[in-house]
Length: 460
Image (cartoon, rainbow, N blue to C red; front, side):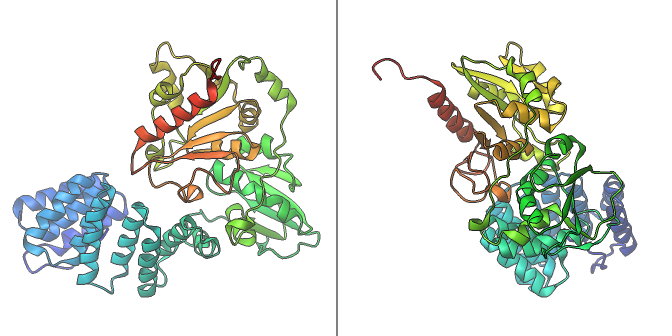
C-alpha cells in the first residue's frame, strides 16, 4: 500500500507522516493509529492524514475501516493516485474484486508509470483468479521497475497457475534472492542440473511439509546424475524419508550442514526437470514400516468404509483460515451409514473434537508421532477427505484416494477446472462454483461419499 510523506497543499506536518512511516516499518501500527487520530482531531479535513490512517488500519488487519478512511480522504482529493490504489487494495482484501479492479485502473490512469500501481492491480487480479490478466499487470510493473522482486514472485505464481511451468519456475527462483527463503551460509556451489560425477549434492529444505513431500519425486532424477545425494528435511519427516529412493542420507533441518561440492533448494528441482505438465515425474514409492502399520491395524474397522479426516493445515500459515473449515462441517457431511471416520488432525485444531459431544470420530492423533506413523495409517485407509494441507501430498505419494476440498483461489498445484491433478493421480479435487462456496463443496463430496459407501440394495 502507498503512503506518501510529501507535504500536501494544506497544513499537514510532514514530520508526522515521516514518523508514521517509521512506525509502519517497525510494525508499530497501534502507535501510528494513535498519533494519526490525534492529528485528525486538529485537522479533520486533511486527506493525507486520512490516507495514512487507512494504511495504518490496513496494517492492523482492518480493511473495512481502512476503506472508509480512503473514501473520507477522497472528499477533497479524488485526484490523488495513491488513494485509488490503496482503496483497491482494501477492496481486494474484502473480496470485492470488480470494484477493486476499477480502482486500480483509475490509479494507473492517473500515474501510468508507477510500478506499484501495476503491481497492486496484479495482486487484485490474481486474488480474483484472473491469472492471465495478473501476469500482464506484473509484467507492466517489472517493465517500469525491473528490480521489483515481489512482482516477479507473484508473476511466477500466476504463471504456474496457468500451467506455464518453464516461465513460472524462472520467476519462482526470485524467492532465493529477495529473502522469502531465509538466507544462511551454505556449503558448496549452487547446482544447475549438471552431471555430478561422484560428487556430493545437498538438497536443502525450504517452506512447509507439503513442499518437501511434493519435491520428493525429483530425487531419483537427481540421483541419476551420478553423485551422492544428501536430503535435508524437517525432523517430523525424517523417519519417513530416510529410505526414499534416490537419497543416500537424510539430515534434520537445524543440524550442522556437511561439506559438499553442490547444493540446491528442493523447490528449485522442478525447474530443472519439468518444463511442462507432460514432464511431471511419477511419485516415488514411499517406504512403509510394517511394524508401524501393525500398530494401527487393530484400530481400523473391517465392516465399513474407513475415512480419514483433516480439517486444517498448519495454523502458523498466514492464510490457513481461508482453506481450513470447522470439524462440525465435516461431521455433518461425512458421518454417514457405512462409514467410519478417523481423525488425522494434528495441532490446536484437534481440540474441536472435544466440542462435539457424541461424535463417532476415532481420534488417532495421540498415536501419530511423526509422518511415518501418519503414512502407516493412511496406507490402510480407504479414503482421506481434507482441506488443503501436507497430508494431501502424503496420501498422493502413497497412491491412496484423497479428496481435497477447495473454497477459493487455491494453491497453484490445484490449478485448472477439473477434478484431477497431474501431480497425484489418486487425488480428487472438489471445487466451489464461486468464491467461498463451501456449501456446494461439502454437498458434492458428501454425495460422492454416499455413493461410494452404500451398497446397492437388492433389485437395484
